Image (cartoon, rainbow, N blue to C red; front, side):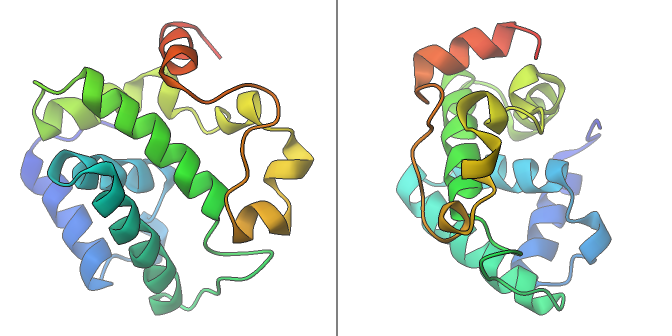
Length: 153
């Protein structure tokens, strides 16, 4: 996916924040884009608070639930915020548009990335959905992310 303008990104995030974004548009890429937008505008702590509460309330607004088997997933949310924060920091001079487009094309945006850091059973558990659990296969830090950014998954 390539965004043509920052307005497209802003409209996506506005739809998410106002709970008007159609559920079928709340894709993996939309999640990542929304996180990038927040991390370009806020520090990681503020962005995390806004994203967590936003995802929970957005899920409810489109008829979803947030429980041990569906909806909001704490570990995945914190995982992706950590990955995206790393990318935003190393690409600080890039615009929002450039950051979104380049991130979505890099290996760090791959849906399977969490499974390099977590055993599948642990990541998909209700405990991981309810509260953050640390990776059990590899450490999640800037050094690990730098190596995966350049490698193919």
